[in-house]
Image (cartoon, rainbow over all chains, first blue to last red; front, side):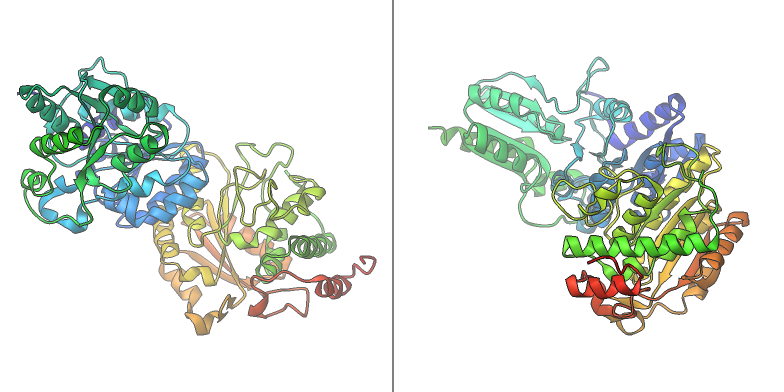
Length: 313
Length: 278
């Protein structure tokens, strides 16, 4: 069994380590520091931690101000509040102003679980991806999250990073190098491309195993940077396989599937199927139950792969 | 740092800024006349004698910062920045044109002297608070000033920021309310009453004072008082007249977002003593 760690836990640890190395890093939270795991940083560096209370819009504006003052602010809350509640503040004071704010949201997707649809952000990637200047990243595992945090502290400009609530298998080893806008081919194949982000990378790898048992060769891409999308890697892969299934814990609209459809529609049209939530809100349930409920399991990806392969000319 | 000016030259600076605002808005053919004219004396009180600024070194780390939270007052800010030397006088006549550094609402990416981009109301106070907290972390002596509209105080986020600034005892932050009593659709009191405004800010923990927003001396005295207040943020509620200085625009909501046409400009400039302008 591979090690299982939640990306939010990896974020908390990465932030704490970053805070030790870089005095300019400051952290903001909106009364969820125990859940987002910014509490590690808060405990060690109380004078560089600002709990803004249950006021996400103001948190984003204050983060922008701290960036104007030369700090590197990391602002965290649940994805639904970071991307949803505060969207227009993020738009004007962070994206439009191109301020150096790092929004790292936890609790993305349906695996928030029992709290239900009100708390499950399934539209955050679409909301953030439409903003000019905004980098959008969904790390596949705890290792990638840590690398992303370190890189974001180096890169100038706004970004949105989505983490998840639940423990999930670690895919990468410590030698992995994250680069903004660069996808990674995790498994080579020739019959179908499975492009995924976040926990769905693990599901795609599992699906590829199932497909292999049917002698279908699936290529698996980790497209952790949703914006800017690694279009070259994407086109190169589908030029070889001739079809693609996108996999994300998000609506099928506007997120990774939308980004791939837009890009391939322009550059290299091939049959495409999208795995994700279809025009509905989340519901309460155990996270693993919900992955089944919303069709986000490896078996669902296998079914989509069969369909998309049949559609090849 | 700029030297203090005497009252007469401050009044003349304010008059010239009003003239520039009207010419800019007329050339642009659109923009916010009333709320630009109402803040002129506040900007003069801040920029000419009170704030620590260095127009020759716009990024001087120890400068004081100004945030125009009511971003639609941009023409007044631009005219003031030109009077300070941040902008060339020629720039002013490019307001709202393609490729101009003078966007309809202030854009810090494009315009020297603009500290942060504003336009969508209610956000500037929070940004100013963030700047204040960052400066305090660096132990810099700089102060931060945010100018808000009274209609803007209907935005809920203003009160999130008000709460947070008091909580963090941001004594290096001063907000000023351009209390002209009008908003786009009519009187603030009729559209959505914000009174009792001073009581609200006091209740939120702010050192609050009320002054005549067209009395530059009184404004500078109030600003000086805020500078010495160490226990938290300060709010100056500046009682103003929308469209101040030009009688045809004064206290009229209809000139919130309408630029003067050629005839109105002529009338206005005559009233401001710019008779030579044809």
